[in-house]
Amino acid sequence: MDGVTVRATLVHELDVIGGDPVERFDRVARLARDVFGAPMAFLNLVDDDTVHTLTPQTSTSRREIPARGSFCAETVLHDEPTLVPDARADARFATLPVVQTLGMRFYAGAPVSVRGTRVGSVCVMDTHPRVLADSDVILLQDLATWAGRILSNDGSDAGSGTDASTLTPDSLQLPGYDLRAEVIPFSGASGDFYDWTPTTNGAAITLTDVMGKGVEAAKHAASIRAAFLAQDLELPAADVIAATDRQIGPALVRAESFATAFHAHLDTSTGWVDFGDAGHGIAMHLSAHGHPVRLLRSRDLPLGLHPGAMRRSSGFLVLQPGDALVVCSDGVLDLFDGTLASLDRLAEMYWAAPDDFLPRVRALVAERSPDDDVTTLVLARHDVAQEQDASS
Image (cartoon, rainbow, N blue to C red; front, side):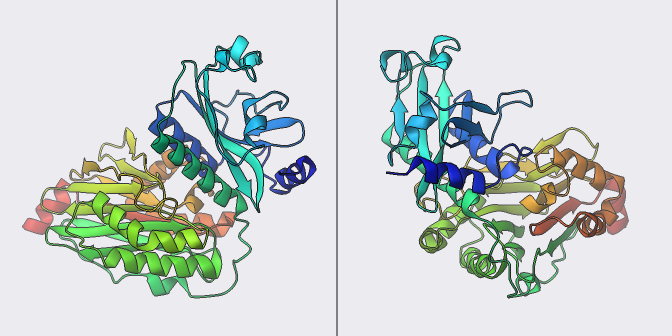
């Protein structure tokens, strides 16, 4: 059993309590809310006497509650998930304030471990009684594994290694479109990569962000890129992601690593984009009219958490003349406030000077020195005037 003092010491060594919201953490809780259809989901840490949430639901939400008698304080005592179908009927929790005052009925939490010690939980809560299927319990455990790997990643492997340019594809000319991207590594080696490959009707486009930095992350990135290229890229994007995960996922599991990925297929004649998203969720469709920005949400797990166990979902959009698809890695968010709200500011940067967008991102990196790889990809369809010029 974990020692409480050991856990409390480790929780504070992680140095993430009380900081600004971080998209890496929010993404886990957001996916839990979406896939379980629950009104509340959290990534929490538990020390001797306090439960600290890393994912407050709103800016004014409480970020700390007493640990005594809380659901999550119970969760960190066990290796298996703590499942409470109806808290009012469970003597352990029936008298808790959140049950008596807030009407909380359902709780499911999976322990999050770092360096072999249970330090917190990923949990979902509801005001109605619920029972989870066995497959849902497995998914909850996968989300807790994801959270533990994020917390375990301290970037200590960010030494010299394979230069990021070795994963850079040759330029690809797509009539009627501009396709541009850039990786700015935190060190000489990067766990980010982008790629594109011609297909029968257009192109297959990928952006992947491997957990960590430096040499090991770069090795995984190279393997993942090779796995994507080994697939039949004429298949739907979600099927390509699923096949890639089956191929490379077991190696990532053994390495206790994972990667988020956005993969899309463009039909140049229609502007149709079929895409899949493996836990990435940092992509947006920008209308030629400027607003609104359509954020492309993810409902799927990253590569390497539970290969082949989760059905991959598909999404689509249509790039009209003047529209753009912008995909980036976590490091871009760190140029602003670290949250998804940063994408609104990124969109404003794009529309202010589309042709100068990547150089402006590069200038921000030089100015603010984020401690992560920064990768940005833009697929822009020419506006009507450009298309008329090209056809005349």
